[in-house]
Structure formats: C-alpha cells, structure tokens
Length: 246
Length: 349
Image (cartoon, rainbow over the protein chains, first blue to last red):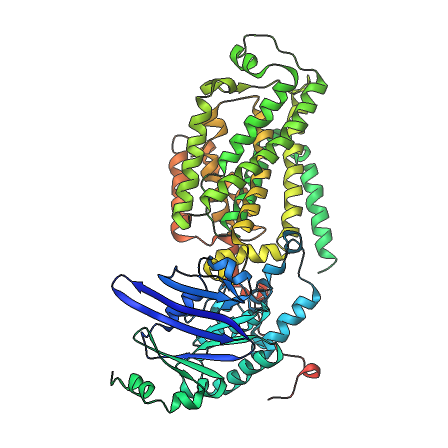
C-alpha cells in the first residue's frame, strides 16, 4: 500500500527549478531511499512533503489524503515526521527533557498536557536514549553534546513521537564511521520493531544500499531513476550523475 | 533534603505573614514589592519560559485596574454619571457594595484580561523576536491612549474609587499587603505545579526552537495563547488590586504605565534570571531594593542610576543571577553524567 504519493510536483525558487515533475511513491511499512548529487533537489522535495513551502504544481497525498496545502504543524499531527539535515534539538534542555517534550502531543488534549509525565513516559524516554546509546549523557544539556550525538538524540526524539512515517534527512552525516553500523541496525529495528515507515535521504551509498527496499535518484531536480538497490547500482545514468558526466 | 524543603516553605510562609508586623513602617513598600514579584513571575512565563519577550504586559495591568473599578462602580451607580461628576457628587458605598464589587471586579479583571491576551495572542504570536516585543509595546501604548480618550471611563482624568471602609489607616495597609501577598503565594504554588507538567516542557521547546516544535506536531499557537492568558489573568488581578490601593488612578501614568512598571517587570526578570522559578522573585527583590535606595540617596539622579542598571543588566548580565549560577555550578541544576547501574546493564551489542 502506498502511504505517500507524490505526483508531478514542481517547485522553483525564482529562476532555479529545484524540482520538476517529480513522482514518487513510498510504500507503507518499508524503507525507501532518496539519493542524488548535491543540489539535486532532495531536501526541497522533503520540505514540500512536510509543508515547509507551497509547491508550484502537482499533488502530495498522505494515506490517501491531499496534504500539499496543509501547514507544517497539521502535517506533523497526521503522524508524518521529519528530522533535519542540520540537527534541531532543544539545546537548553537535557536529553531526558528533550525526549519527554517529544511525546506525541497530537494525541494529547490540553487537559492531558497539563499533567506531569508518568513513570512510563520516563522509562520510555530512558529506554529510547539507551537504544541510541545516549543513556549516560541523559542529564547533560543537549546543546553541549557533539553533532553526532545530537543527531542520535534527534532520531530518538522522533521515535518517541510514535510517527507513522519518518522522513530522515541524511541520518548518518557527521556521525563517527564506527557508529554508522550501529545506526543502520537501529534504523532497521525502528522499521521492523516499531513499524515506522522510513523515507531516507542519504549520501552514503553503503548505508542506503544496505537498508532500502526501493531507491529513487534525483539529478538536476528531475527524477533520474528508481528501482531496487541492485537496479540503481547497475544504472549507468546514476553513475554518470554522481561522476558529473551529465 | 526532603524534610528541609517543606520546612523552608513553612518558614517562608510564616515570614510573609509576619513581615508587615516586623517592619510596620514599610507595609506599603512591601505591598509594592509583591506587585513587582507577581509581575516579574508572570512576565517570565512568556519571556523566560516561552521565549516571547512581551513589552506590553502592562496592558493587562491597566485593563484589570479599569475593569475592577468599573464593576465596583456599576454595582451601585451609573458609571458614566459617576465618572462625569469626578469627585463633585456624593457617592457612598456600603461595606457590602465595596467588598462585593471588589471581589467580583477582581475576578472579572482576571478573566477579561485573560480573554484580551487570548485574542491579542492570536494576532501577535504571528510575530517573533523583536517584532513581537515591539508589537506588544505598541498595543499597550495604544490601549493607554484609547482609554484616556474614552469619556465614559473618565477619560484622561481617570477614576476615583471609594476608600477602604475603615477609619484606621493602618488597617487599609494591612489589607492590601495581604491581598497582594495571597495573590503572589497562589501564583507561586500554581507556577511550581505548572512548571512540572508536560505543558511547561512544550513552552520551553517553543523557546528553544519553535520550528522544531512545530515539526514535532506541538500545538504551538494554542500553548502560547494559554500561557499568555494565564499570565494576563494574574496581571489583571494585580492591576485591579492596585486600583483599589491607589484609590485614584489615571490612564497613562498609573494604569498603562508603559515606561515605568511595564519595563521594571522585565528588568526584575533579567536581574534574577530568565526561565527559572526563583529568578524573577530574587530579581524583583533586588530591583525594588536598588530602586528605593537610589530614590532615597541619589535623588535627582535616580532615573540615571536605574537606567544604568538596566543597561548593565541587558549588556553584561543577560542570564541574571540564576543563569550565572547555572553556568558556574551546573551540577546544582542536575547536570551530570550518570552511568547505568551494573545490574540492569545489557550486554554490549
């Protein structure tokens, strides 16, 4: 079943065509990859999906409903969540507080928001911090963590939010290479154990080829190729795009 | 530690109750101190905890003052006729009329101020950072000007309220001290609870990164409106009490005093430390002491001294006392590395 359907979406900034007639489907329960050279329009497409800017034309559907006209918060409240390429966390709070704020407020009434966090919330927060390897640092101000650790924290916060679909913008960028294998493992487990559909932008080919069921490749704002990791790896156009033969 | 805490609060409460007896000559000063404390604590709800620096909270103070006064008058007389006479006619209030009017007036002052904040919030929370600050300042100045041209509520002359019904002037001072103190204590207890809820986490998230909070699906606008409305509720009540305490007030210098109290509450919070429970209280006490000392010993230069204090605080000491402490002694504020106890440690992957 398709959970996200992007149809003929175009977006330009002034004269720059960041996305031209892009059509992409994300299968429910799977891991979909989005690759492409720098400046090929991957993040623009993410921003269009989560409502950061209006699109020029086309349609974006989530669970069958049109969302291309909705603002960011409304889309997030449907359970479609994204992480940022430049991580965004709440720097003045410690890790546990960051996690507790990330409880799914979309499922909360104002009355429920005006209660204290339960023991179960704390346990879940600590469990997920443990899951990403930040347990020991949970009482440190999150702004004082390294970039890679902040990235892991942001990932844990996203899991805390119990999203239906998670859009990850370069989850392994800036992360110590020795930690990347662990992160791949955790992303896969988030998909299989928590049932979260993943849609991932990634530059690290080894990472994305290892995880995704289906990969889309963008170049110059256009959809260049799509297919299984094997098909993409064997596609001459993709190789050319990366090596600059275009 | 667990036994010390209730003891500390009990001792504090006893001190608050005893204060006007311990310093009988300073009853009015102490009442004013409570005004500073309450305004600082409510300002910190949006300014410190939520990251929205309002320069217009004085609007709710003025609104509360006028609402409470008008309700009290309306119970006994025709408001237009009363304000028109301005001291000329003879208007007597029975004790019942005075206290019922005050009770109902303060309640409505709080509720209507909250409603005003809710509506203003819907419009002004579209702006962020300095734009929000200037927008709120503009709203407060505009409100003052509007009210001073509204003859039904006394125009530029303001309103003269009935005097506290007691022949003993000391009773009057005790009454207003305890009324302010009770409001302050209730506000403190309320905030102590509120800052422990999920709601507080959400407004802190708005302060740290509002775009992230939106992307995480927080109901940001609703939370911002609720916070400002609660803040305005208490400011409105304090404004209402101040009206009765002042007996006579006028719109620009007393009710909507943008450049005095409107700025003082911000300075109190900056001095003590934004975004903490105790910071605004400590800041308010410090500020009040500095203000009174300069008024007594530097007369003629008091505004210069106060201005210098504001400049120094804003430029060099933005984090305030509590913020400075948190930087020097982070462990006092719970920052620490804590390893997993061995018994629950899971095997390494």
